[in-house]
Image 1 (cartoon, one colour):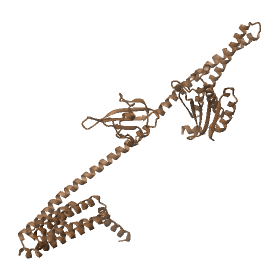
Image 2 (cartoon, one colour; image 1 turned 135 degrees about the vertical axis):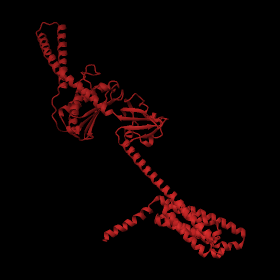
Image 3 (tube, helix red, strand yellow; image 1 turned 90 degrees about the horizontal axis):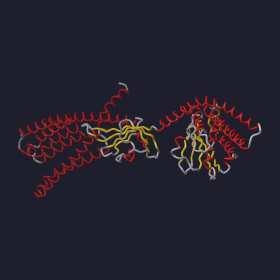
Image 4 (cartoon, one colour; image 1 turned 90 degrees about the vertical axis):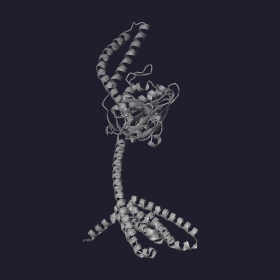
Length: 543
């Protein structure tokens, strides 16, 4: 054999021993057996001491061999305990304990009268112990050791104690040893097979449980289970992300404390949900009872998903469709309005400059021309909104664009009584500078109108943010009413007396064309904050 084959063979021989040494079941049984032996010997020592104390000095001399056996067992048990603590030589210790149990029985029987001794039963206990720790092999080894030891005692001790060899007693005892070995090994093997089947079932159950937990933890939907009293018993990983809770925080707590808005319905339902982080979400959910094996309810479960972004995208899609439809209508309507409007304006201008008009008529003509010009401006802005020019994309330093826009806006009469504050960090995006400048100007003009007359502040900031750049324009004006917030980007919606309602709609359209997003946060009395995000490149939003 080669050196490699010899090494492999040696490793193969060492693996069973290593496996046995690492067997926690065998080690645990050896620990309990050692404890049992110590208890038995302690009882034997106490009984012997009591008997000799009552019998006098002669009994002490007779009991000295028994004391020597007991001390030897204590020393052996101490050594075994130390080795078991170090977790080495486990299988060797098993056979050593078998031999020690047989030696203990032999020693006690030898000093207590051989066949007349009541401690012959210790041999059968050693056999039973062998079957417990090593099953059939342990029982047979212990029986053979017990038989050999007992026969040695029979030849060496019996003639001196009883005067002759009691063959009948010896035969009965040896037969009892083997009968005990057969019965104990049978029961031990049955116990071993039962244990193996139970371990296999436990392994299968553990695998199924692990698979179940992996599936539940991997689904994208949140799952929370409640007991009959409505207390949380389980919350998966997705549910923890949506609810802002950990399983440790939620388990055992009333489910209504967080999930009260998710009431039972007829099937798939939606509801507003405020999570533990204070975020307001739109949640789709299904709530259903949990039934036990007897079909009796044992609690309930809720499967839920965060639909906030989906509903926001749907709202944007509906708005885009409305704007597209509005653009198609506007294209034809604008031409139909602008041509007659130009004719009316020209005729009125001729009449007004022709002379011979009374002052009242002259004033009326001025009103007609002013309103005609206003209507023409409205039509022009409407056309600009419905058919914006194609974007001219180029890398743009957003902080420089904002700086220039703020300098021009500071000289506008609308900003005469407004304090402008800025915090501009370098940020580069790919955009149409003119269209982005128009967006910022509209936001500044709205903010200036909101704080007009109060000498308020407008704060403008920008900087890199999540693959793009973010521009924030906020004011400390009266704020926006909650019922108006969902409609402020709708065309022709305005709260101003002379507003057109196209400014913020144009802002939304330009931002959408750039693949960005715009959000507003406001409440009455706390001003308004518009947050504009633009991607670093047109593909960033899609990617």
